[in-house]
Image (tube, helix red, strand yellow):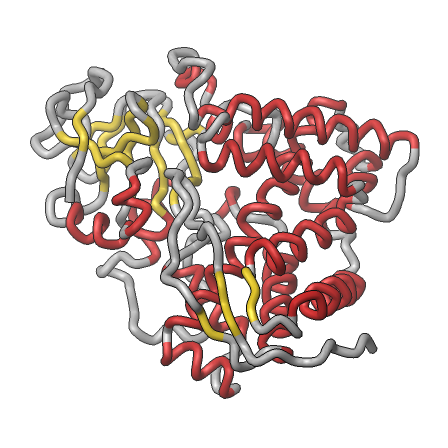
Amino acid sequence: MSTSRSEAPTPSCPAFPGSPFDSDGPRMPLFAPEFDADPHGYYHEMRKQYPSLMPVELAPGVPATLVIDYKTAVRILHDPEHFSADPRTWQKGIAADCPVLPMMQWRPMATRSEGADAARYRQATTESVGEVDLYALRATVEEIAISLINSFCGDGRADLISQYTFPLVFGVLNVLFGCPPKIGQRMAAGMASIVEGVDADNGNKLISEAMLELVSLKRTKPGKDVTSALLRHPAELDDLEMVHQLASQYGAGIEFQQNLIVNTLLRILTDDRLGGSVLGGSLSTREALDDVLFNDPPLANYLLTYPRQPILIDGVWLPAHQPVVISIAACNNDPAVRSDNRTGNRSHLAFGLGPRTCPAQSMAYLIAQDAIDQLLDALPDIRLTEPPTWRPGPFHRSLTSLPVEFPPSAPLHVS
């Protein structure tokens, strides 16, 4: 395993031996291809030296602390008094073209704000999402899934990302948000750019422009969708606030909802124990989803916080206003809390914790479960044709493609 060295900011308090902030210490580059290929191998090796707090770089010259201990993560996430979600002090020293800035910068939304502002944004989002008719949503997923399966089931082969999961999630989100496909396409392209850190600044602009266009459309033509519900909410969000609430929700859906489905399909196709249990009916798709949310969550490293002042955690001084990143994947697999039997266990951090809990969990499970069930019911003998390769980026766990083959079958009948 290789690591790169970078000059960390001088901490306001002296570091204890082994602190991630020793200026000459190695930092693990989360943007390195080697990390993308085997993140769990990196976590395993680095635990030997850093039991709970790991020195990392999120991009060249952007140091951070990665939390890999479950109990430490829970402690931090339940301590907003000392660990702020507001990154504005940190980002003053960050170049405008920094590839990870769009994923980390301040925005007027709950996960980047504090106090009354955070509560206001969270209430607006939670109550608007709560208006979604889950029965109608299930019917939408089924309709789109069957149409997509019918488009390739006779071919005997497909790429399950470009031909199934992406267009399925894209179509479902457009219905949920009342978003025309042309606007949604720009939003999806922008989100892919900022998650991968490739032309991220332009991706940020694409997202803002697309969501502003959607807000303008829904102010004049409201409907039964999440965008219109947000506009009606008593929080009275202005255009800028609307853009960022929508970007957060739509962006999480198009990237991380899609990756949850894909990562679970990969697990089913490559893990004989889990795959055989799902296809044999002894393990539910919901349980397979939780297995992936423990092992390879689509958002692997995130839940960002910034200490308000230097603070001592696990014998390490963390400097003020420097990013502390929760490694959701590493914490979920912390040997101190990991259990071999996780059936029915949903203690993973994949949907956040406390005030950082995702308000759309029920929808995420429903969409993913129905998408997977529809595919496996139609094509039970599906198999992977190439080894998986992973997209670059410090925050997500995402495949580039998922090529499969299967016995050709006749199109499904729509009920």
